[in-house]
Length: 168
Image 1 (cartoon, one colour):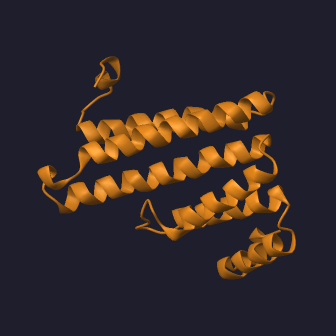
Image 2: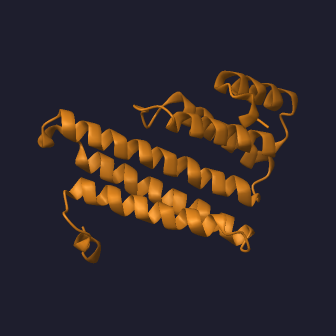
Image 3: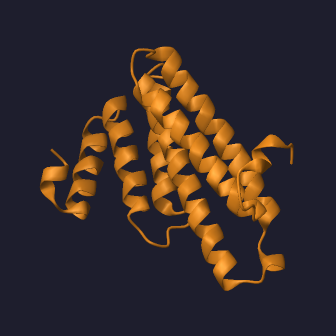
């Protein structure tokens, strides 16, 4: 229904009205969060601390306060973190193209990646625990690992994936 609007700002306004009118509905809050983090990914130079990511996390936190055992909310939490990891990857690529290597905070980016991958993994695992018949948690978790490995390769400047066989 929201996609049929073909107007991102109007869709955002609709979600705001829904969560204002039904503040205790975790489904509206979860879908609003998903809308926000997907909107963030449409931006070419999105930052990892963009307002859209922060607002999406706030909506998810409120949804979890209402229903902490919702598999879809845990899946959305993992997806939000995957989108932030994607923004982190774009940030790294941009910094590697515009700065000297010694001016890029590789350690900080690595620490952020490790934290977000762990949290996303936990969110997807919880989603799988709550809804083991759903394929979405398994697929998203696999995609998370692929994205983490690819970003790790960029961080290390590795030519292949042999770095996966060692402990950095």
